[in-house]
Image (tube, rainbow, N blue to C red; front, side, top):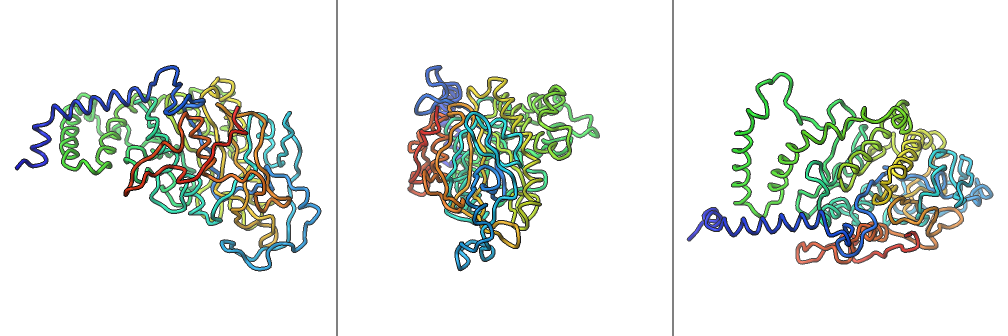
Amino acid sequence: MLSRRSMLEHCSGGFASLALAQLFGREVQAAPPAEWNGGLHHRARAKRVIQLFMTGGASPMDTYDYKPQLEKLHGQKLGPKEKPEGFTAPPGALMKSPFKFQQHGESGRWVSSVFPHQAQVVDEMAFLMAMASKTNVHGPGTYMMNSGFLLPGFPCMGAWISYGLGNLTDELPTFIVLPDPKGLPYNQKGPFSAGFLPAVHQGTMIRDAGQAPIPNLFPATGHPFATRDADRDGFALLKQLNVDHAQTRADDTRLEARIRSYELAAKMQLAAPTAFDLNQETKTTQEAYGLDQKVTADFGRRCLLARRLIERGSRFVQVWSGPQGATENWDNHGSIPKELPPMAASVDQPIAALVRDLRSRGLFDDTLLIWTTEFGRTPFAQGGDGRDHNGGSFVSWLAGAGVKQGTSYGQSDEWGYQAVEGRTYCYDFHATILHLLGIDHERLTYRQNGIDRRLTDVHGHVIHDILA
């Protein structure tokens, strides 16, 4: 009887052939024929994505979904008589937006005064005005908008895209997450998990608040003996030990992911310092993103970094605004007039700068930019002038490759409480993004526990109305 190790040793030639075939397959997938334009199932319009996620539930009727009826009915108790499931308090009276709305651009898009900079670029965007969620609880809602499921354990969109399309470069992670320095979102690292997909497809989290956004990339200054030459033999031995260990545990994808991460770290010693050096950008560019202002410096730095990363080959970059919790995010229970403006101000100029920057550099030819949150907020007041959770209707937008500029799809009711026309769930949102990347969402599957799983579960339709 042969042990597993002996069998692997005797069959090493065959396994080497398989590995070589897999390598060639990855190269074809990462650099497909020109007529594919990077698509897995059809011609792709985009090959990389930047996702901007507003943690906490950004209020639609105070940002992009103008509801003049709320001004007429302000103060009237017309909402549910009993507290709906998921609400944190009984609904109060209808509350108008405390912010002024104006129409902008050739599209005439109504935008609140909290977004003066984004208002100037609305003609670049396609708005989904009737997004809906199956929950109005932060944890499940955040999972749903990222993985398509309310529960943990399922791969997020970035992981599915990494699995389906592979990498564009060997020198940077395929899927990068730039969390808010104030803390991780709801579910901590769950929203950027690979779930049951091979662990190599999970998001690589990079905290860029400090001088060293990627810790331990270089030896500490107190260890001058740790040079590349001195470490070469050690690296070779470590790699062999890791490979031998992984061969005896072929069903544990975390081992392969760990080996790949070490190899990637070595390559990043050359690529990452350049990618993360924002001093290479002109003063004009840095100021456009708001790096010279305390309010916008943090989010602006991460937006600029996202552009530099996709420019250098990262396929999916996620930028988070706000941590989990009751403060310093978009979860404005206490006071919309006091809590929403500082959050809006922190992202408004950087997002507008990112849109313009991507356009001016020609990156919108193959880059998709998306903006979303986990759900919306109620048109009813809570505790005076706050707003409660609402999965009935919220707003998301897309811009860039393959997107019809200055358009919108769907509509909420006259209060902004429920989606009434063109209701769009995460399944449709994800199906549309995958479609732009050249992926048929019904054909991107992974068999798990006897089920062919997919990002869109058993749902989802491509929203052709917003596609160019």
